Length: 212
Image (cartoon, rainbow, N blue to C red):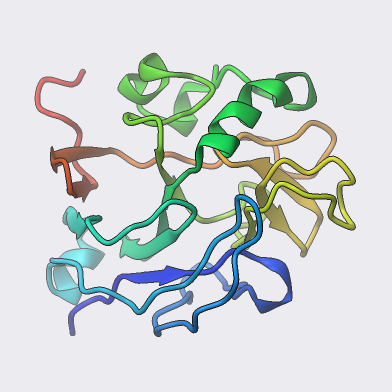
């Protein structure tokens, strides 16, 4: 059965917190966005291989042409949720201000992202500045964190600049997937291998041609 790609809203009480093998696969309702918040739109279909091919680790080709600023597209690769997020200008400007609060601000742990992603920008952890691609599993115990994209005070952080919060054990990550210091998660969220086939198409699971 084919896989569905889903664009969903950011966290709060309406977030969907899933396990390693179960995550959002249905369309979501439209909600209001605040500041750098996220609004939902109906799910779109990605061009994915069969379920058997997915289990074998086949690349997943995703159309991001409908992805708007502040939205997250959720797809599946190797049984894992892959988050594709179009970050706002406000979020991009906030990321460098968080370095002194993070465990690995320069993404020095090479196991957490391909070299070509780190070389492009260690703070943004992305090939294109505005598009983030992450494995949506906490590096503590594999829970799926909530996306809380609004830049506003939150109960778990009065100076929250947007990011991902795991309510299971209170781990926090910024909108580049960089882990905060002093939380249970030991490392940044993983950036999977990926490349752009064209301006509107991401291939998850396959490095760019010529990448080491």
